[in-house]
Length: 245
Image (cartoon, rainbow, N blue to C red; front, side, top):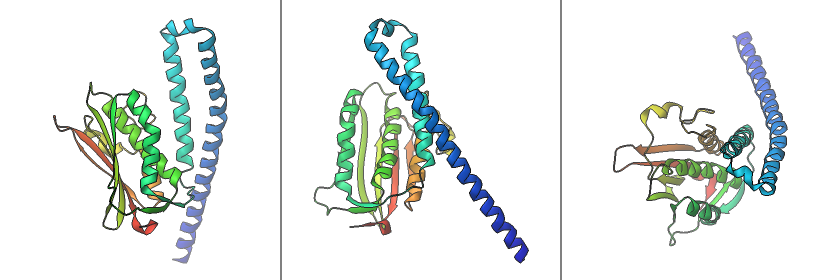
C-alpha cells in the first residue's frame, strides 16, 4: 500500500514538472513570435500611411486581418499561460465596472451597440479582494464574446453589464440580445482553441472560466435561440469569502 502511494506521489510530481516545463515553453514560444510580428504590424501601418494606394488592393485588408488574428492568438495563449498568477488587492465593484464602461463606450458606439451599465445607486459599496486586472480580463472576454454575438443583428444591438449580490456570492453579469448559443456548442464552449467564429481564437471563454476558478468562483450560462426572445447571459460568480462588503 505504501509503495503504491509512493508511486502515485512520484507520478504526480512528474506530471507537475512536465506541466511547468510546458508552460515555460509555451510562454517563450508566444513571446518570441509575438515580438517580430508586432514589428511587422507596425511596418504595415507605416506602409499604409506612406503608400495609401495599398488600401485599394483586395489583399491588403486580408493581410492585416490575418496578422491581427495571429497576434490575438499569441496574446490569448500568453494570458492562458499566466492565469494562475493572482495578485489580489481591494477595490470597489462600482468603480471597477465604471472603468470598464469608460473603456468600452467609444468601441460600442462605433459598432452601433447600445451598451448599458446597470447598477443600484442606493446600494452600499461592495469591496472586493481580488486580482483586479485578471478579473477585468475575464469580463472583457465575456463582453467581446457578446459583441461578436450581436454583430450579426442588423439593428437594436444591446449588451448589459451589471453586478449584484446573491446569497454568499457576488455575480458579474454580461447579457446580450444576440441569436443565442445552440445546444450543440455547449459541450466544448469553454474548451481552448475550439471556436465557431470566423476570426475567433477559441481562448476567450476558457480564459474567463480559468480566472473565475482561480478566484474560487465559476461561470454559469443561460441562453435562448428561439425568436424573438433570443439572448445569451453569462454570469461570473465569486464567493463572498473572497470579498468584503
